[in-house]
Amino acid sequence: QCGLSAGMMAVPPLARFDTQTIFLLRVNALIHKQFEYEARYEEGVQTPADTILKRRGACRDLAWLMVEGLRRLGYAAMFASGYIYSNGSVRGAGATHAWCEVFLPDLGWIELDPTNGLAESPDLIRVATTRTPTQAQPVSGAIRGDPGRARLHVSVDVQLVDAFCEAA
Image 1 (cartoon, rainbow, N blue to C red):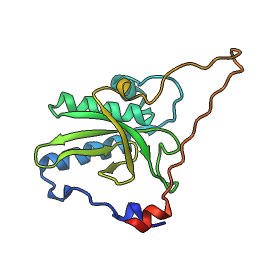
Image 2: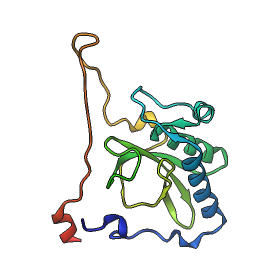
Image 3: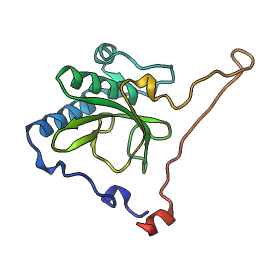
Image 4: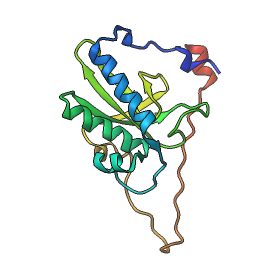
């Protein structure tokens, strides 16, 4: 491995840690610590109220909770979808992943992953940022076949490629 997580890529300076940044990092950590991650295979996203009542959800549910909560506080926030690089220590790997992006005037858009408690991680691989989770669906459709017998299995494996590591 070439250490992508160890800072191979430049990260915007979150080190300013003004009051807003500290607040956002604390909200991100609070959701990570107080809510249980649960892989869900049902369509759609839970409402933030359902996620709060259940105290658990998939990455898309936790991201949507954070997006809507921050919007209610006056922040510009977006739903982000993509993938996460994992060496086996993060939640939500092996499938599409979701997180929150929030705008701060001095820093621009910053990535916050409440599922894993990450902020501005180079391991987050963005495919889409949208206003709502529905707009971020990579594919939609139906499976044809005998009801109860037709199955679709999809998995994602994000890997570092040696050629990429050497080029960096």
